[in-house]
Amino acid sequence: MEYIYSVLILIGIYTIMAASFNLIIGYGGLISIAHPIFFALAAYASALLNLRLGVPIPLAILIGALFSAGMSVMLSLPSLRVSGDYLLIASIGFQLGFIEVIKNIEFAGAASGLTGIGSLYSGPTRSLAFTVTVLVAAAAVVWLVHWLTHGEYGRAIQAMRDDEECFASLGRNAMAIKITIFAVGSGLAGLAGALYAHYFQFLSPEQFGIVQSALILTMVVVGGMGTTLGPIVGALLLTALPQAITFLNMPPSVMAPVQGMLYTGLVLVFLFVRPAGLVGKKAGQ
Amino acid sequence: MFDLPVLLQILWTSVATSTCYVLFAVAFALTLKVAQVWNFVQAGTMGLAFYAMFAAMLGWGWPHPAGFAFGLGIAVAVSMAVEVWGYRVLRRRRSSALLLFIFAIVVAEFIAYLLSLVFGTEPQSLTKSLTSEVYLVGGVAISSWDLNALAVTAAACAALFAFLRFTRQGQFLYAVADNGDLAELYGISANRAYLIAMVIAAALVSVGVYLYGTRASMIPNAPLELMLLAVIATILGGIGSLVGAGVAAVFLSVLQSASILVIPSQWQSSLTYFVLFAVILFFPTGFRVPAWLRRR
Image (cartoon, rainbow over all chains, first blue to last red; front, side, top):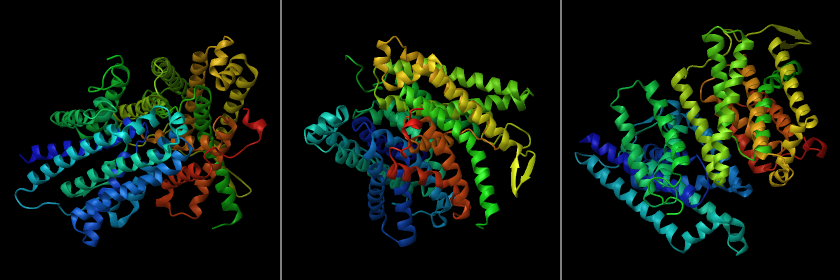
């Protein structure tokens, strides 16, 4: 049963990640690969606040998510000032750079990882309570993204994505929208990270590398960019798939590249065969 | 710490080491200039060229020229395939820049995973020993690798500039880079220009990874990080300027090597990322270089 709970929690966490990334890439048209680092920043911030300063876990989770949202502005502000292309380039540097920084900070566990992180719940119903919490959080995030992107603000986001010059000529501030959705998406990724930290109780910088970026991107592309249900389908499919591969008992040196090839290969297949993803409508439909 | 021989040594070594970075940066800048794509697939091409050379030279015992030709052939073939079956298809569908980006970065990652699966993640080099003969000139150690690398890089860059300036196909690349639609009206095939740019870039990175692999070790993920330096150099040099990208690559290499005097060694690897931010923040359109240099 514990295994089932763990898989459900992972599905919930990845749904939050995919839905928030979909807000950035699918609705906002902003490409960044640094989503996992905002997950990591909040995870570390929340864990350290609780571990070193004794901040209550729910408050630490909230601060962690806000910290990620704040840090995202540090990335988006200088790069979007120039063009959207620069955001991708800066995001690669931001992700790899912060992984290097975490590896060198002793009080964050450095390269060997941070252990002894407090758990949000305790007792025999810990996993059940955590599963419910994460799934409720995932549903809330999916609803929030849907609400943000389907109201008046959502129409502004899509107009900005489809024709920025025309949007700006109407007197709207495209830059403010971009920075806001990037911050909201990154803050939600931070929420997922903080929840992850207080369930699995271990963090290592290696967990937040390019493989995670590829995984989240795959979830969104395979599910369907710019759709509400796409990220959920993507998260379900791509959390279940590695679990199935685990049963093949491959050595870790083979498992990691096979998983990576699977994720990136799926993105390539979908880019050419079904760019709209599983949930999105094909052109003309 | 700051005495002259030490500074001269750092300067010399970093200029010699920059030769590979110059080739990577010029290759990246060329595809960006002509095809207007941020060709992150180049990281995959670099990895494939390196490991093909590694398999040929150390696995099958081929002599270095044959091993290099094999790596070059693989890199060129993959670049052509990516252009014809990847970028060209996406352009024909009028895919957004977002999809082109995703395609490029995902292909690079796919190749890195493939190489990890086949060759493992242990560092590998193209020679059994990475040391080479050293001469002392005025207190500065100059290795035969340094001299060879400088000569090969100078020759490769000279050949590229001669091609671009004095051949019809080279002029076509400029025409397509300036205005692809207008060039097509004059009968110049933009697709052909993109393909030629990709092939030249593959050739340049093959030379670069050969030099790199005879001096240092490589792991499958390393090309993506090496690419970052090429990207920074391209931005810093001014997008569209090949000379600017090359000069910026030398500057970044010198900066990285000289930083050892002031930055603790464990933070050295983070420097590239800080420079990336500084460049985007302060020099988003690059340093201004003289107009006659920018034209190249």
